[in-house]
Image (tube, rainbow, N blue to C red; front, top):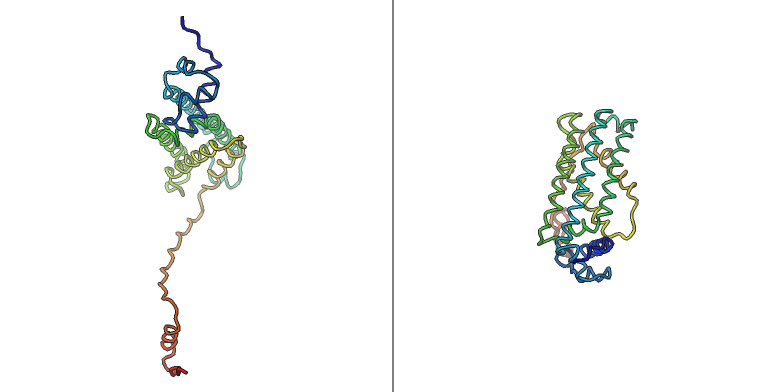
Length: 257
């Protein structure tokens, strides 16, 4: 008769595996190191998981499921806000209207929930970003990135669509900028030992997104192309004399002592 699986042992194995995957990657992680970190045997590991890849796959599946839940909740909140209050425009941002402040709080709350998820899953995210090469999981993070870029691009296009056909910022570029920011923050979280002020991060992200991308009355001028700098020849006494004669051809030549 097989012994029942201990749920506490499973939790201990998961915690130890997260740290091991973040430190060594999926390929480099060893079951012996995972079990040793939590004082369990390899037999206890196989009682709960078929392999280290199976364990990592369950962690990734749980993370993706939570990510989809948070993204869907955000989309639902956004649609409800539009239906009740309308879409904030540049005039709301400029006047810091009550509608804009409400919108900013709603978006910051959604960002905070996303950042909390990333903090709780930071070891799995780190392993997906830098430790999944050459495995069946190497495309997972980049598939998620592409999906989030598309989602944010659509949302931003929705916002800009109310204010002319030629937005200051391309929606695809904006989506890449925001998702890239999240990726860098996720990578930074993987290196931190203490939880940062995620609420401040969320508010800062929203202010950067909306106030930093408000349409301008006049387009910014294109940066000037610097003029090419002519190569200079080394200065010697003879070249200086030649240059002086060229500048003043009527000057009598200097007599040598």
